[in-house]
Image 1 (tube, rainbow, N blue to C red):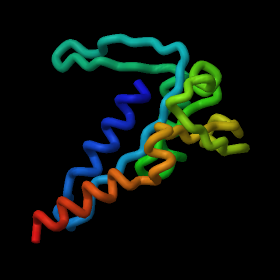
Image 2: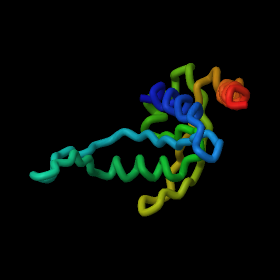
Image 3: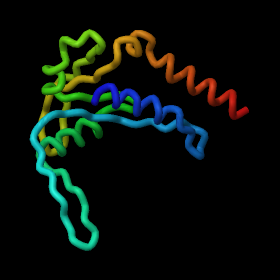
Length: 130
């Protein structure tokens, strides 16, 4: 899931919007219980509900552009994985939920290079448009 999040950011950053800016996204990841059901007869819809859905939504909305924001629960599962670097965010207020410690996560190679890959891709695309 985390690798997919970084892939999505990289893909989004390669998309040029009509105003000539690049698409930026925010991602929140959490783990927990959910309830899934199909609602409706004429137009059935898949619905995912639960506190975990709300928590994840709040992680995304309190994130920063092109960053992956994870809960403490995710951090505890992957904290020993050497592929990632973590930036602790203390006392983050999540609307209608409360105050939590959360983390930004980065792939170790991307963290050390800054966003060099993204910036290089953007520069190449800008040159191609000229």
